[in-house]
Image 1 (tube, one colour):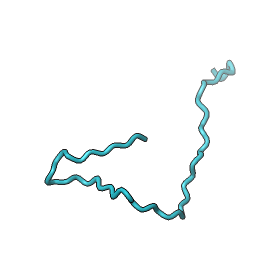
Image 2 (cartoon, helix red, strand yellow):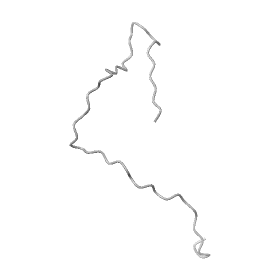
Image 3 (cartoon, rainbow, N blue to C red):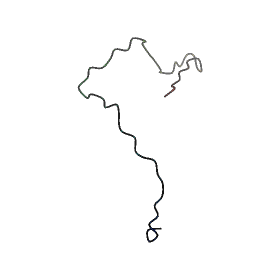
Image 4 (cartoon, rainbow, N blue to C red):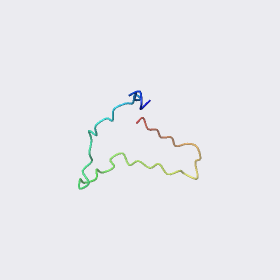
Length: 51
């Protein structure tokens, strides 16, 4: 392929649009999320993520 001048196609790298500030203050947990399993009530707590 190199001798024929051919190259493979590939996607372009997307630019990084969000850069986190390392010195930013953390946000308080207003929902009081607790994802630890409860040993007294097995299989009753569910959570999900759509990212």
